[in-house]
Length: 68
View 1 (tube, one colour):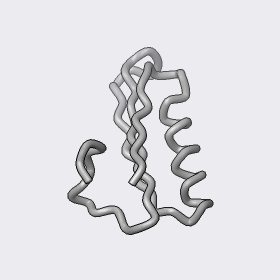
View 2 (cartoon, one colour; view 1 turned 120 degrees about the vertical axis):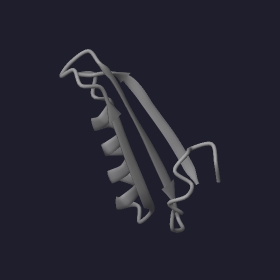
View 3 (cartoon, one colour; view 1 turned 30 degrees about the horizontal axis):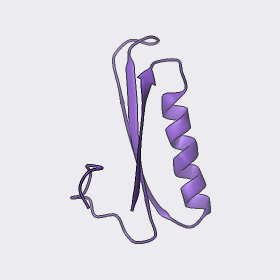
View 4 (cartoon, one colour; view 1 turned 180 degrees about the vertical axis):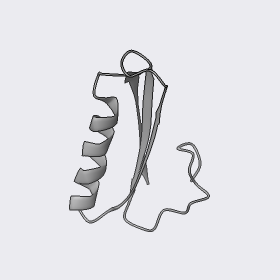
């Protein structure tokens, strides 16, 4: 399983970058999760997303990137 975390501030394209990584994994036939997290501000607030890619099903219990 490959896990990636993208983080920054709103308006920097963090969520879009994560979505592009997730879509690339889907085009390769992988199983993908994409979890966005962002503050209430429209721009300038925190923005994070985690993306998981795997060739097998991703267990919903392993939502943290540091667990397998």
